[in-house]
Length: 194
Image 1 (tube, rainbow, N blue to C red):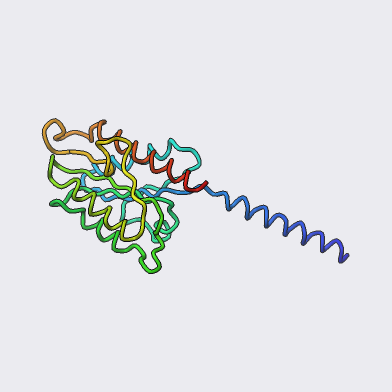
Image 2: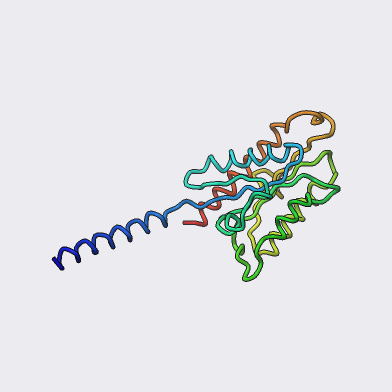
């Protein structure tokens, strides 16, 4: 009888180890967090997600900043952060989200960071907002990634309220840049996991 119990325990132990190995093979995750008042920044976030989705073996979570938990921030291999331009600054909700990130012992160090923005017009602060978010990520020790094109070197941006872009959905030109950013980040996350 003792021998039979030993075998049962041994089999149970084997399955526990096997189950642990299967769980350890969970795919890395990209967190796409954004604030959107008008829906334009959300449209860019969804385009970023389309890019991430094109890379196999990488998961993603897409949420407004107010719905993201600290656990999701800590568990993400990459954070792609989006904000509209507010008087040449990031939205207060995005700043509040960044301020909530844990700092002690730099738990975000070596995670990938990337940004995207939407602005009402040309030269109204898109790059300034991008650099503000990038600076915050650098303080946390994150590795910053830009988009796939020269025109998206600092991340993806969209103009939503000037000239031909007024009163319309976000233009495909800008959505493609966001998609490229998401795909590039996901590809690099996968390479870093190997």
